[in-house]
Amino acid sequence: MHRKVFERLRRYVARWRGFNRNVRLAFAASALAGVGQGIFRVAFNLYVLQVGIHPAVLGTILSAGPIAYAVGSIPSGFVAEKIGYRRMLLMIYSCAGLAQLAQVATGRIAFIYVASFLAGLAFSGDFVVRLPFISENTSDADRNHAFSAGNILSGLSLSIGSLIAGFGPNLLRGIAPELALAYRYTLWIGGGLTLCAMLPIWFIRSQPARRSVKISLKPYLWGMDRFTRELALIELCIGVSIGLVIPFQNLYFIYRLGTSREFFGSVSALSILPTTLAIALGPAFAHAATAVTAFGSMRLLMTLALAIMAWTSQRWLGSVGFWVHRALFSAGQPLAFAFAMQESTPRSKVAAAAWLNVTFWLGQAMAAPVAGWYIARSDYSSTFSIAIVGILIAGVLSFAWFGSTERRSTGEAGQKHE
Image (cartoon, rainbow, N blue to C red; front, side, top):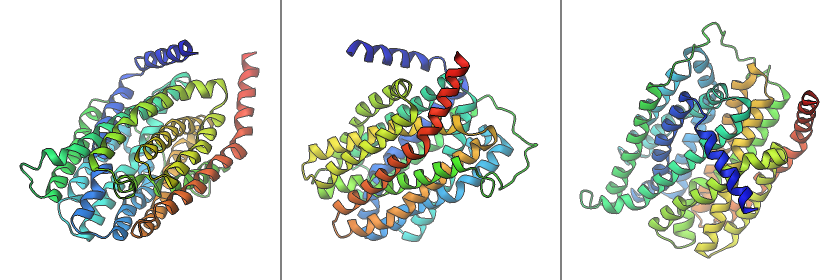
């Protein structure tokens, strides 16, 4: 059994060398931006509270980014089709980095909110562009592995960012005696790394933009097929579940479990170990069963991890729940995205990617103020309980709607093979 696992991991790593230059450069850019986002994930909430902003207002501020993601995803798809993926990614990382720097330039609530919205607006195109970009630069056989590899790098970069955010403020106290200022400098490092993500993108071999494509809302709205609508509704449920938990996990560890910022930064960084293992084994699980069985099962199992975090007061048990939740989410999403790209028609791929992004972040935007309201009352259990309902619905609908779709596709593939 152990030999089979290690052999699968060996083959998985070997596949990385087969990705083309464009994919590797896109991964490098994503990793740099991921470190920046990891820093913001740990330190931004604490910075906002440190400058005297109420936790209930924090929920409103954190909803700005998801709202911007939802608003900007479809226009990003339009622009990317017209100007090409390379130019679009350059715009994304430059604007996002500058907006992140502006987010912590002042303690004024209105300014922070607007800057957070602009950062979200820039990042809204990242997912929409990278999904079809990687799809077009990989073969059918490598697509699952490419999406999983991207998630592994994303998890690793987030972990590095978490460590920087956990210990960086203490290291900066020599030049920033006030804790709020130390947080600000740490977050500026994150924004600077996002700007650096432009460098790998600059060397991507540009692919021809579809200048002949006429911009139309039809594939995104009234022309959207049933498959895309079902994907979007499930992703909305996932977004609500994630939005109630992920943005506030640093506060959960510090104020509910009584840990330090350094403890959470370390736990967040160590999550890369179970997450990487889960992501690496995900394609093998999908191959042995089906993709729908793989990501649908992972979504259902996430309810157990959320239940642990909802009702424990032990920091190590909470850490285990956190690791399992992140590992299952990170492993299931790339399989679901690869399935979405495989089952979508060529013309609907960008629309499907856009709506996956829109509804996921719309769900988070809806959830953030609700979570902020509960957290202002020191009620973390309710946020986790609602999150359990959201991900449970997503898991059940995944099996109900897509199980037959994949069985049909698998059967057709088998007939062709015969």
